[in-house]
Amino acid sequence: MHELTVSPWASLAYLVAGVCFILALRGLSSPASSQRGNRFGIIGMTIAVVTTLVTHVPVRMNGCPLGIGRCAILDRPVVDWLTVIEILAAIGLGAAIGLVTARRIAMTAMPQLVAAFHSLVGLAAVLVGVAAYLNPQAFGISDLVVPMIGQPFAVIHPVSRIELGLGVAIGAITFSGSVIAFLKLNGNMGGKPIMLPGRHVINLALLAGILGLIAYFVTEQAPWVFWTIAILSFVIGFLLIVPIGGADMPVVVSMLNSYSGWAAAAMGFTLHNSAMIITGALVGSSGAILSYIMCRAMNRSFISVIAGGFGAVADTSGGGTAIDRPWKRGSAEDAAFLMSQAEQVIIVPGYGMAVAQAQHVLREMGDKLKAEGVRVKYAIHPVAGRMPGHMNVLLAEANVPYDDVFELEDINSEFAQTDVAFVIGANDVTNPAAKTDKTSPIYGMPVLDVEKAKTVLFIKRSMGGVGYAGVDNDLFYRDNTMMLLADAKKMVEDIVKALD
Image (cartoon, rainbow, N blue to C red; front, side, top):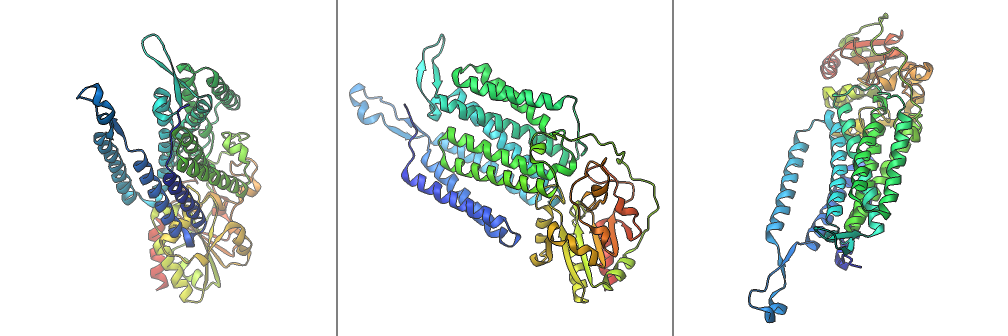
């Protein structure tokens, strides 16, 4: 059996890269150590990429132009520089695209960028699987060539067929699912769940069909089996994400991150690359754990979410538009006066803050309140924004002290003793209906208890819109709520001026 050999030095380098990836995950678990974790990730990936390039330099035979007797001396492998140049050009092109994207992308678009990256990982796994299926001998997964009419036929090892089937299936699900997530996050598709009739039966049938075909692929290497696995996986990836509503999109992003990791790990076995196996397993397991933690924080069933909204129901609340009810409007001067007289202010950031890029002026407002002796804290809901940690990243970018930032379970009990809750663009995660309205699509999701504060200041562009989940917020119409209707950044700037 032909096997691809790996240098002991390459194995050691991959091990070092794996350790760096573990340290990266450890660092990224806290905002205070996130930059160090990011550096470890960069170092680990650099080691892995360079090692792979050095140990897999493409070669070709030099040829034997001087006769058969001289072949043993002259017909030896030499570096195929043309292929090397093509590889380096592809790396350079990808690096340039990544650099330009990173510099130009707004923080508000970070969730859809992450979804787009996940789709590329899934597509890469599918393309590697296709290449391995079409030319298995080049990947070291076949050593038996059966003569066929017209051309020889390479028989892929049974274990490698399992790896190929799983890698292509997971990669295809990741790609199509991530594309749908991107469209939802980017506003090209609505945030409401799209409930297809009989979706559970269809999904279960497709999943059973894919697993059955992978099992059959082990015994029968027919092209139709391989391509059917790929096509059905693309379809089920689309069907799994379409029924998931906007309120659950952060969990979806985390879940797709896990899928992309498992797809990379499966392709790592096909490529005999231990670095891909380690990295993919780390990403897959950490993404799955994060998804589970977020589901618990949202009172959602983990199986329900990964099964494509299994158990979800269509929105019957009629909450797609704002309700015409009496509400109170305030000004920047009102807000500045109330907060300057408070003992404690809890700031609740949401996606509206991200859209307005108001995190820097928000930190300035917090600093001014602290200078006047006001205790200022920031309350972060696990799914505030459009991806896990979205608000934490924005506040860290604005140099908000980490000690001032609290998660939902750590600060929810403090709202009842708080003078002012200052909500800036956080709609669904502050909606009291999640605790009382059983017809609401966000019912059962733990929310920040901002309505318990003595006064709630809520920044919103207008009263005509609703949150990403498509429901109106009962908080707007409470007696202790004052609406500040304006662009979030402009309103906070006016409050800062009033504080001066």
